[in-house]
Image 1 (cartoon, rainbow, N blue to C red):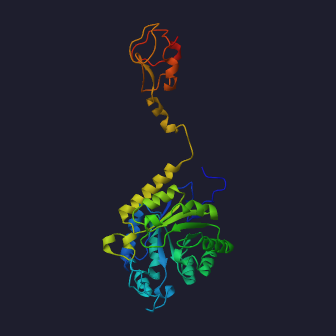
Image 2 (cartoon, rainbow, N blue to C red; image 1 turned 180 degrees about the vertical axis):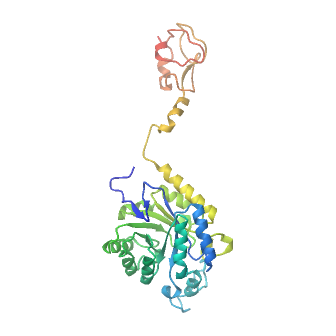
Length: 356
């Protein structure tokens, strides 16, 4: 049961996002299509077959992301990066999804029963996606401090999903207040660790309920860890949206392949996050209705040897055993030492009426 002050449900393309609905699973295609439209369409089809509820693209060009220079800061120097040594410009060239593909991929996803949208990385991309009538916009974690971009996306009258990544609480507050001031009140915040891949030990999922309460909005996880464990745990902590990068075959390459799910893993994510959501239920004691029949297999006091009227009752002729049709075990001390009113054969459940 949701709290009276719980964040309101968000409607994205007719799908309800919130605590009363199973987690919304987004398959992020990113650049794992390797610049092949056929591969991109195969990814969309595989995502649908896996049960994902939406596919997401990224809408940018190398020129809208960075400058075509190899000066310091424009080349990835981190030794542990998947993209060590690559210039930002060449990386974005390789990873970009051509604008010309968007309409076809969106239409194909819709034909397969999925929603489709994208992350715009500049204001022109927001206008482009709005013309394609996307059901929402997604702001990537690195763009959370791009306040003009957030203001532009929020002005379009559509829900806004924003990854928080390495943002401070004050930076998130500025992004959220900007979106609300621009007219967007359907906001979903995704906890995100902006490393690729991310380590489970650096994921800090307990931030999720704090994020929900701090901003009174639906929350989720943009998950860059391996496997599905972090995502399932996130649902248990209140995540109503899970975003995972997706690839047909990790061995086939792709800019994000190393931390992306393959189709069978995505299918498992859909099943297990819904199972985790179903298991949350509500605070309850005393067993569920489904458990009522099981109560007969508790223990109770039974006659373990034939008893005649006047016999003294005790451990020599009584025993605490299953099933539970006799007196409860808590009455054992009260019963021992009493006398039998009538004859009872072995296997008779003991009741007060048979005790003198």
